[in-house]
Length: 148
Image (cartoon, rainbow, N blue to C red; front, side):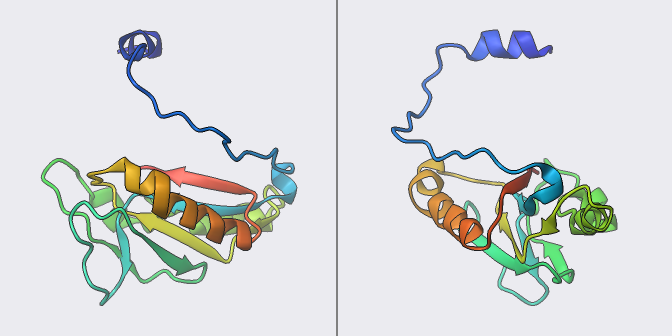
């Protein structure tokens, strides 16, 4: 299905309205601090498995690599993520981009939400703003979203 057919099919659907959307123009990528925000349902090895449909998020330091995906579904092939965490959480690639001067820096912390969400209103009104606040406090200019 082409993009134009998808756009045509979704016109008129109800959309949330944001009275005062927060947006600022980021610096050039070569000066920007970049964070990963994924919906891969990542967790540190040994952490409690996510509750199904959780709207919370987990925070990882940029050096955390001992992460696993707790999202189990017959509808999703996670073999690529199991083989290489960078498929959904590309910190190694960001580190390379920072070393090459393509981006300014890799953020000190990164976030993972659970992809199997039940209610977007909680994210819109609670965990989303909390996640954004954390990223702003870390000086993040650009969030690389990796939906899974």
